[in-house]
Image (cartoon, rainbow, N blue to C red):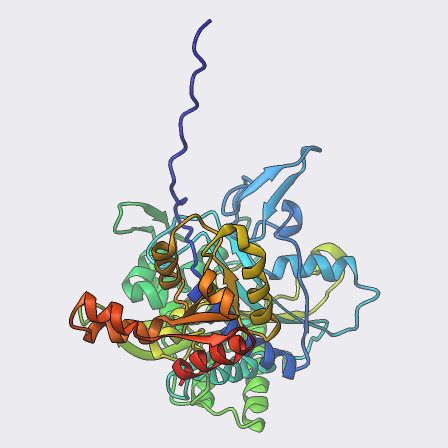
Amino acid sequence: MGKNKKLPRPKARLPKGLRDIDAEEIRARDGMLRTIRHVYDSYGFEPLDTPAFEYTDALGKFLPDQDRPNEGVFSFQDEDEQWLSLRYDLTAPLARYVAENYERLPKPFRRYQSGPVWRNEKPGPGRFREFIQFDADTVGASSVAADAEMCMLAADALEALGIERGDYVIKINNRKVLDGVLGSIGVDSDGDDYLSKRLTILRALDKYDRLGGEGVKLLLGEGRKDESGDFTKGAGLSSEQIEPLMAFVVAQGNGRSETLSTIEELVRGNEVGQQGIDELKTIDALLSASEFATDRVVIDPSIVRGLDYYTGPVFEAELTFEVKDEKGRPVRFGSVGGGGRYDGLVARFKGQPVPATGFSVGVSRLYTALSTLGKLEETAPFGPVVVSVFDKANLADYQKLLAQLRAAGIRAEVYLGNGKMGQQFKYADQRRSPCVVIQGPDEKEKGEVQIKDLIEGAKAAASVASNEEWRSERPAQFAVPEEKLVEAVREVIARHET
């Protein structure tokens, strides 16, 4: 008989565009999310959770607008040969949820949700295929007061996280104003290719902060080749059409009123464009009445947002402070969130207009920014107390000690490996334990435990002259009666928490 062939071992490797997240970041990120959740709660939003994947037709082909169902999203077929896709944002699943539960939901319906989303796109530095978003949305409110509220919500959330005024700004624009400009340059809304051309134009303008004016002009024209050599086909506009668009993008004035006056001239005579201007004027008045001045919220025509489903006001939260990278070069974090009005998304299911608006936080980028500013909640300075195992035959005795610590609210664990005492101490160091609890036969007979203060021991080790001195003095290790275990461990922890 032939020998059984061994299956090849899989290579331990992380897929491109994904990353592992360790405990320290998870704990700090959770603290950040709690702060945001508190602000959203204070505005009257309620939590909701939707599944990681949906039927592909429910998500829609908004990212990107391609023919294949797995273009831009990760898709698969179920046993009924229906296409399912991992959600690319939290908004499209919300639209499905509202449509499915429309009759029983209060209108407006206000919800927030945090969770991972996936995009089948080319990964790059700081650009991942899986990332976390934190959204707040109002569905069923046609008034732009809901859009103004989203801008206030974003500003209050950033300040609650410790980002000071002057280090951030919320920027607003309106897709209707942009549509007015497109009409004025002859991009015909009745044309056969209008929707695809409009989307190409929107995505080109959305890259203004990253590519600058020249890069955007190429994407509005014949196209652009990036640093890797990949070519992106452009919108095919003429130079006469491109110039008014670029003038619109850079038309920000000194204050919201001046900006509105400037861009109003660019859409004069266009009904849709004027409607967008009027909506921005209303938002400006609401922000001013709520004392959200231009040090917090501005009108910026360069804000476009790349998703095709936005129908009115759009907004972005941008961090404006600069930091230095490892080579001393200035770096700005830029956008950490955005959103806008999407009045047509729920209507895809209902066949009737259902107004909606929302704001989404890019959790990973905001986490990095807060970490740089030192604004994250400090995680626990150390790990769990470790109860060592002198003799496995007496494991029940060690579990009893462990139960006392846990009952007192002290984070603790029994060592469950196979190492000897030296290896157990090494394990406790790796776990960043404040101390180790030891009970050998001598301590058991006396009704005592030994407590080894690892933090104090590390300090003492640096000053001890010899191994003999270490063994004779046994620094930072002491004995206490079993009934004093909890009290003694608490004293060690308190000593190092301050």
